[in-house]
Image 1 (cartoon, one colour):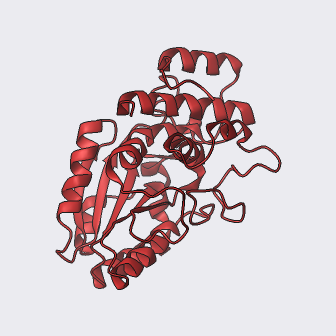
Image 2 (spheres, helix red, strand yellow):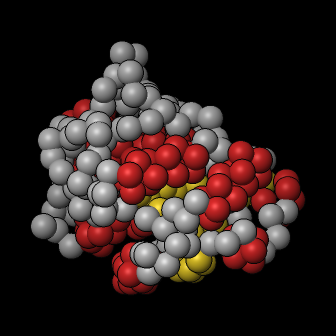
Image 3 (cartoon, one colour):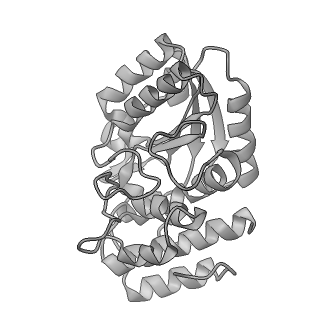
Length: 278
């Protein structure tokens, strides 16, 4: 298997090309979470192919912030869930690769529609409880955005998970400080997220979302604490648009596509890999 750095670079190339090709999409958060999902899918999770909707006896992942679908689709394709060439159909008419992941097209790797923010954590908790009831010792992972935590349903779910000791759940928060209308501090300040989760009865970890070694070690540490009755949350610091300098750290790239010149510059900066573009 190619090394994780090359895989992450190629996935970033896929993201900017997909969004450019559709003239729409969400590159900023997708680029920011690339390193995390690369480590998760190519190093950490126990997976079974061909894809089974049940997820029994394998780790499962739920993307709650579904607008970063370019990243999710690229990871799934590069991991072997479906043909890489299908990435060129992103957001096209009759494509399975819609702007937000859906289930009615039966795209391998997608277990829940995630267009409306705030719901993924609740779904993940249900899946984690099902694994406990089935004596399935694999883990459930989910990713939410920091701005998404402004949705009230999350905090009901956070209370529920702690009360029910859902300790086979590992939630990661993409803490990039940006959302569609500006910084999270300006729109609705979240305060100290780690202290909030701790007060709600969760075990809290922190990591650098762009350090592959730190990502791997932190997730493994969270897994090792399984059995203590505490759900786990990882506060992951990232930069929106990571890898493409003119996009980095700016909420303006939350949901717009690069033009031809910007795409060419992004691809030049990212560099080529031996995996090859779709």
